[in-house]
Length: 398
Ligand code: PMP
Image 1 (cartoon, rainbow, N blue to C red):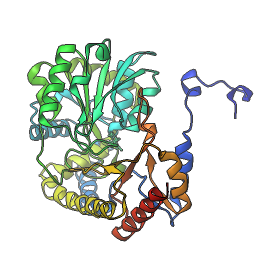
Image 2: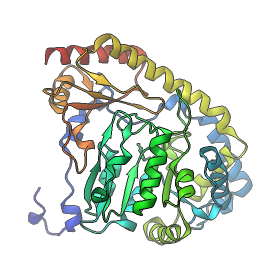
Image 3: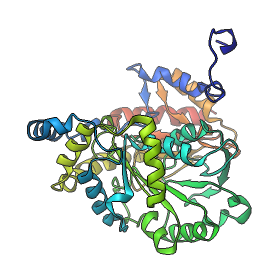
Image 4: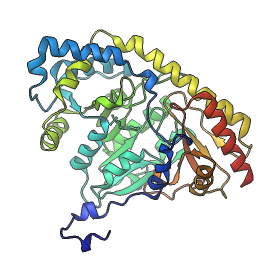
């Protein structure tokens, strides 16, 4: 309905929001007969329900009153210290007061939008990039500038003086990128942080999937590499993929002046992240639970990814190319240039298969409409094979 016919007026910010056509099409994916490769949900088989149940019991039994009380905006101190210590694994040395606990890294994206973006501010994103970040940033009306990518991910040399001039930040997903599944090589990471240090462009490193590596060799995070060369790096982490997304728990690591401003922003947003959740997650992870848990999650993802790649090798024609992720949840498909992903989706839905077309993932760039994202983690093997066979047949018909 046109808001002008309503007896109230939404802000211009709210008025510019539109419900995407793809979201409307994908509503049908909730029907049980649909084989959906569209979702971004982690595999529920990987949720450690009993361990989390026990952690909540322990916290409520031993520290119930403080767990149910308001807490500091910065977050629960032992959890901040645990995160700081844990980041040594990705090659970063940080202090606990450089860590801010947030209600999922999606909240971090919103807070960073509030911190850095004025209407028209230049924001650098990979083409393609995470749709949820584009949605968060777009509320603050930036002007997107795409940084070119190839089959190795973001191209640091694409960050020319012209491209970077005046940019408030660059938003980068170095591991198993959403949506492409691609991972940046060490050389590109190094080149990127050096370039950003020279250009004085802060880097937002979003890494929710880094711990879900099931092939290849782990690379150091941009945070440690960047600090070594004087780049400003803001790192986002999340417990959504390593424990469970329903916890809504994540964190931001940044230099202290940025943390102080973000604390003011978070205070205005929600005072602080749920105390009980922070304490229960700390209780869960403090004795090294993730070291035994993550291999199980990686095994699930590796097997699921293998089923899909195997089915694609069998059923997709040679004119189609796709990424082979070393971790995470997504495969990115490039179709022959005459096939439009959104048009293919309409035909796929008619055959009870769904995926996300690639075009909406491109902000500030000419969208590559002959692309799509497949998620493999929540669909059983037989359904993956069935769905991929149907997609293969539809592509061949095009
Ligand atoms: N960043 C990326 C790249 C994601 O894929 C997601 C979740 N799909 C998020 C951030 C948000 O994660 P959460 O809020 O659950 O931590």
